[in-house]
Length: 197
Image 1: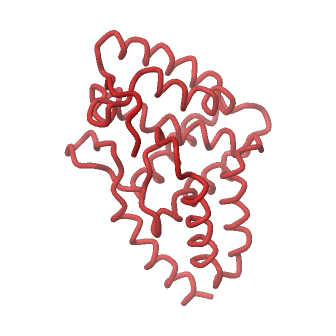
Image 2: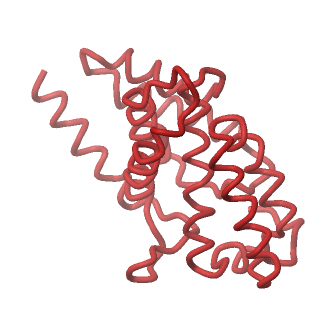
């Protein structure tokens, strides 16, 4: 078992090379998917006191640590993309199944990944809320950096993130909605709302 876990962890190192569209606050470089997964797991853990009744925060953290592993094969796709999701998700699932296949708990890991993707359980909904919120929080701290760079409008942001955040953590959405309206007044959004990635 130990060699299989060591092999997996070595392969997961590739997630550090998957660049995202949002910049880190400290050094201004684009974050990678490994950093993102860690940070949203911490966000979810911190928000546990306001999680809806019945949410198992330990399972949420496990989902968030697993949710982007398929990007090792596909790279990251900005959440505001509107096409190509089915093909990318099929490739990500194949990657997840390949990487976890040799582990004794591999089926459990794949099941958690699939549960996150389905976003129907309370745990998965809360995990999705954290996943959608984190890039927003970074953009709010960076004066809309990736929204401006990628031409993402206020309406496109709200249209993509409102439902999963509001469903998974209503208090978090109430906070973010006010912050997004303030950011719109500051001009922190792009203007090319039809841009595709």
